[in-house]
Image (cartoon, rainbow, N blue to C red):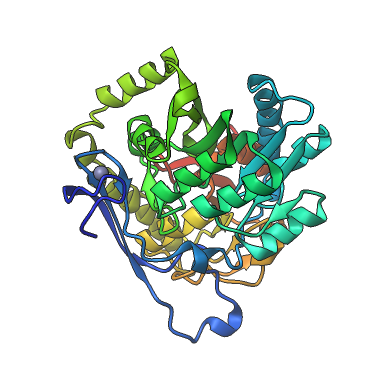
Length: 411
Ligand SMILES: [Zn+2]
């Protein structure tokens, strides 16, 4: 990588180098285990001109999204999050009866189904064929496309401008930030709203969430760098909310620059916090790699000691980000016998690189392991509750991030 993808500066500084790993969603079928498995470098750098943190675009979204394994509706808390968002957003934008909502990267329709329920016209734009088909089956009109300025203009020409454009958990996944931002502007009405949820680099750094760095996440935003990114498409930030999702996200409310007006007090407050954390100078980024190394040492030490005591450890969840953690730490089935996942697509497959078998969740109760390592740590509250049955046989839950913590029945 030689140039920043947002401002073209050559001033890119290293934040953390996680080595080379396979794409985190490339779960292997049994008949792929004897085939070569390509690995790609995973090195996060930050642009010292615009402070956009980024990794080189080595794997294109076209390769990733042909058959995507992530179905949003498998997470109960995520569906509830979407329902609450729709109720709030419809009110905020003052949605007219004949209004139109577009969601980009609409996944399996987990969010737009709440828009359909309210009788509001909507369209999902979802690049992956299998996930988009699931949305259509659930009654959510869905176009199989990537958002570009051309796609945006075509949708506007056919359906009219949207009062609300939603782009949740996608703004990090597109290597062409500028083209995507222009696509959002093409979709939205001149007095409309764009709502974007994306992981917040401030909490990623503060809370050691390095496992959320993976090849499909091309860039990592502060509010300061998001303002620059939105501006590249003619959009201006007017408000921001801090959300607990993905360990810490920002919901950006933007409008076409000419309709935006002054940003809210909350925007200034978050910018102040980012500045206080040193994220507008190199010092805020330079301590991160040594804290990442400590997560690895602590987790390996725990797994090795458990193995030496003859105790059993299995995983819960096979999220994409779990694979950054497993590969960076070098954890294989001798230390983690298997993991389980609610998504049946993953059953019988193996984690990329580390080749840990993925089974159905019922396996845990059948085997009664001593420890369950929870890979989607961001759902800690939900999963501590859901998995409390492991305490019935004296089992404990292990959360690797922000620092290793072991939960037994008393805690
Ligand atoms: Zn830059």
